[in-house]
Length: 153
Image 1 (cartoon, helix red, strand yellow):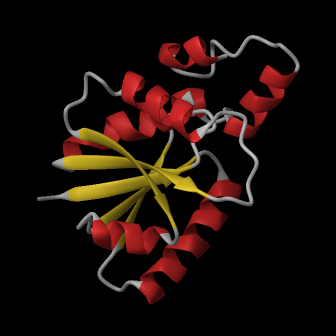
Image 2 (tube, rainbow, N blue to C red):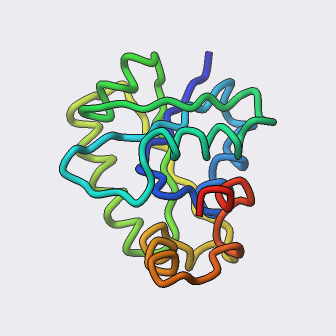
């Protein structure tokens, strides 16, 4: 089975995240969208809310499974028997960061391959950080997140 893990905090999931996942579906038998739990990171949405958001967004996509994990991503990939880690980039800064992570991951887990997809151009300026800033200031995020997320804001 060709299985990939798409890790992230998804606080919240954006249209850019959704774009990457849906475009990657034909490449894999299953994509596990995995929320990494980092106890030192403050999030706007609870883990349960983020899991529910993701399940609502991908409820019509049988090849998508939603999970959460603690610890190192490459270890979670091994546990899930995933040979690919899917990552998305919006710009050059994202690319440099993801390249570094991919190279470090390759050192730690030589059999795990990282697949990087560039988000479609219309989603490139969207980031979860900016979406959270808009939410904190009571702004409208409907153009930046999947409709299912709006039930949580």
